[in-house]
Length: 470
Ligand SMILES: [Zn+2]
Image 1 (spheres, rainbow, N blue to C red):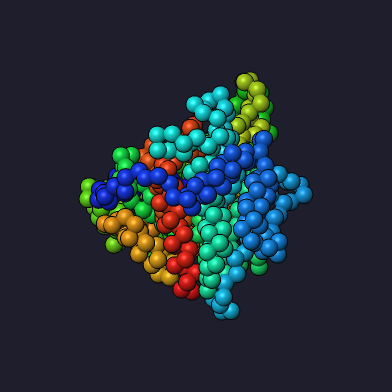
Image 2 (image 1 turned 90 degrees about the horizontal axis):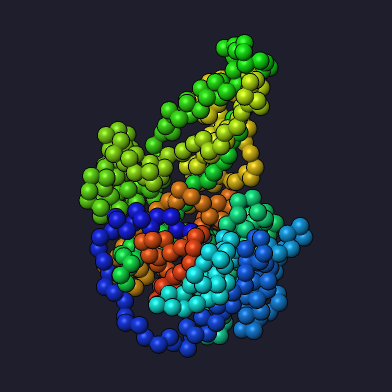
């Protein structure tokens, strides 16, 4: 899900005019709402739900709209029967134009009824919001993609490009069976596309009905966990010796703490630092613009580093997150260990980061081992005008005065798996969220009704723009 909200809200002070007053939903919006509700109300948590059932229900909707069985691929790994997904194909007329892929995950973060104000698996419309787990992350997008294909089919639309849809499971739980990873490894041809449209971008509202920013996510960091371990013969704590597993580990951790990975920028982050920095206009904003112009500007870097998001957006970071060691209060430790969580700037092989950690530690007595799950580390997608251009034009039309800002996420989505098999993946603008984060991954998840309906029209137009002009 989108991680940038707070920053963009403070970065962009230009407010677009509030969109039209609340009007009665159109007939096509009501048809969509029904599909959306069915998807939200199909529990897809890892503990108790079924992505497979949700995928089957969306496949049934597509089938009812005229999609043949040969255009629908339901998939599930036998070891994970409830974590399945769906690929749908809407063929284009051109023999040479490459397909585009619309992707959304249909699994959701766990939600306890007792903690929520309303049933998380009932979609409730109240005070201009849709409430329910996944209404924003990411079933809004999944429902809109599915509904867009249904609309195209019903309208007899003939796209030049083939349009593909992938609804996948396992995005929210690290190490769970991941549908995007599975498709990339096993069904590369089925999902082959020139580029993919995904979650991770989106709009920001001021919380008072105005959309104040729209962003496209271009690239994200990947992650790796490393176990640091020291071992020692140990002994009685009444006769300590210099050589001690805990102190040895502590020295290694101190070196990692004191080490700062070098500043790096992609085309996207350079543009983000320049444009979002200029829009802020404060001390941090000026430093952002200066750093974009000259990444070696140490004074600007020092100011930028004070903001924790920006600090992590311009480099790889590695931080200690778990610690263990020793076996008795009166014994010298035989073993000490720590987990180091690294968020890796796009394009660096994990082995390179491991080697860098070993160099920083400078002690062969400290072993560094990468732990599963192992994520790929693809380069960031290009700032391709063919992809970004239609977003810019449509954002200007839907929200006059707003400019779509490209940004790189410090977190990650399924884009990593697609990028690793050569499908550049972009988190699209469109649906917007509120300054408080909308309860995504937390309590009482909600999304503005208008954000869904306007976002849906925007996404429909966006897909057409790509499909019409390969
Ligand atoms: Zn998500």
